Amino acid sequence: MTLTIRPVFAFALFTLGPVPPAFASGNEHVVDDAAVETPGTCHLESWMTFHGSDRGLLNLSPACTRKTWPRLEIGGAFQRSWDNGTDLTTFGPALKLNIRPAEKGFGVGLIASGAVGLHSGKVETASLIVPVTIPVGRAVRFNLNGGWSYARASSRQHAAFYGAQVEVQVARDFSLMGEVFGRGDGPMGSQAGLRWNPGGGRLDVDLVVGRLIDGVNPRSASLGITLRS
Image (cartoon, rainbow, N blue to C red):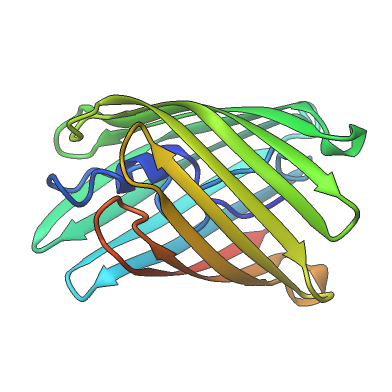
């Protein structure tokens, strides 16, 4: 399974710039894969994204896959963004269903998620995304995403989301990622990053840099940590 920012969070990110903060699958990785967490395992994904000294995002996303439902990952997210003294805190559920495993040649999934504003009580972001994973040998895989997104604070509340990502295993403990993505007719964003997975174990550490990931800021940097149990 790859560490990603779920697409609903990136969509919130797309609204952080031109309007008061309200985000969507907003960094760490924006494009998701079709796999779910290993059945019987839980994880906590966390990351911080910085656009500068006064703009950024903190995300905490726990999720579990039960052995009795081995293709369904049940999770959620708590997210806090800040923009020049204006803060937004959201929380909400996320479900990910693996429809076809990538081991069969290509993988297909379905992701549904949403986030409610802590103070407003209104739905700030939501999404329904179909991820497709295409493995190429043992070291390379491509992930494609397409679907619908909602961002309450955006001038385009309802819009299509699309993205493409490549992941390459370059050494036993290290992999590289590059991706491009967009929402509606807005500007396309991009990211690239390095993951360290020491000994193939329960810890992932990601360092990611991006361009226009919120549709406005020319540069961003993210640090992500995933722990599994």
